[in-house]
Length: 567
Image (cartoon, rainbow, N blue to C red; front, side):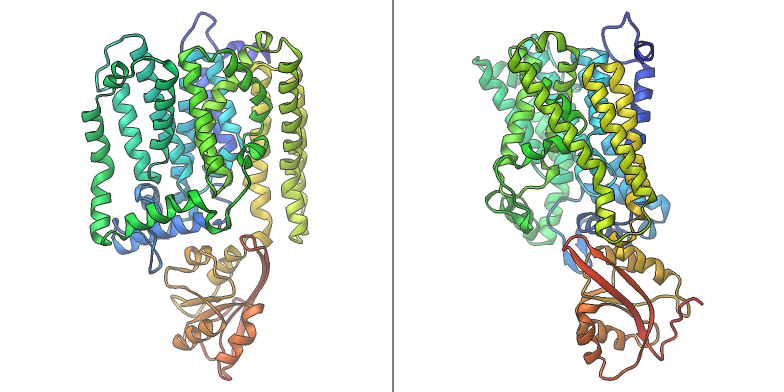
């Protein structure tokens, strides 16, 4: 493997990565992040809400207001919805499969991987660049976000670009170079504006904290550096990107968007846990062995490299980028594992720097103990990740366990490869480790998890409905199972209701109506039908993973309706 690693690089080069290295990184990143794009059913709840809202934009032609069914969805700006519309339009528009709505997330993940690799290579050499890119491409949280149709992967892409523009502007300002606006400052401001249109001021906060921390740490006058950012031009660019839609939506909603998105979706999450998504202080730190796996085995080296290089401006910037972002989200009361994703590129680069400097960093027992601690945590995390699909399938009562067993076995191989890597850490062993981990993800996300039918009841209901005959459309209602994925699969007009509501919907559409009724609502459903006879078209048993409730769904229609089941 050392020979292959050497072949990837020009031994005389001291700058960026070669084409061979970029191709290797792209191959591993796509192998890790793309499988499951088409095979994973729609996930509740956020993915279903985002993709359905984008679908409704195409149905109504209204690309300003954001709605899920009739309810306003004023929690995030329109940027990601527009990207999903553009991605889905060539593949059926509002009727496109969920994979089309996931394309912006995959593209965002690839931009984040490539941006991290480029920045690391620019600052610390091509080997560090490839190592940082591989760590980003295989981080577990990247796998989740790159194949989920929501904001966070594309937000990360914008964040990497904004932080790259910020860092390069600062470094060139420190060197006394004259900076034109069209260049690094423009990248910073444009990417910041794009990030605002994707998810509000999250990346602006990351950049502001990093910049403020950097200037304070210098203990020098900040004004010569601040002048390099061309503030008037920069704010004009940012405003041109973010302000037009913000003005229009707030006029259209009489200020309701700003009140909901800032008052509830942003500040409401700071003081108290939103939607029961709480967690203790150090929640993200405790989870990092899993969320950054397998790169978490190098987090000890990342800490050591940060401390050793803290006087260098580029290392100082990376420390502030990662640390201040992390601290903020540890204090925010609402906690979800992906919240700290904007800090991952800085962690990946610091870990890559540590990997390149192992002989100099592991010189005392304290340094070796820190390094070994993170290795142990990463091995434990790897075993948990490997076992999770199999354990989950067994818990859900799945009896076809071949695919999940293979995925679990591949996870075990990846853990063995991780141990092999840390015994003699270096890029020559990081490459095969990354490839093995990518194959593990391919098996897990692309094959095993989608095959656990009990986890995807709305998809199974939709597959059954697709086989029905007798009508061109089937007005539907669900009772006792109100997750947003039902709307994506069964149509914008589906009623998410209770037993009585499902019965009323069925009586309102006597010829072609169907109802999906959980056993928990069946008694109320039957009472509300007032003696009308129904036919059962099929049954689906499964689990509502969001609530942890077992489901026993009957798909029924009126006895006299035209709806017919196959066979």
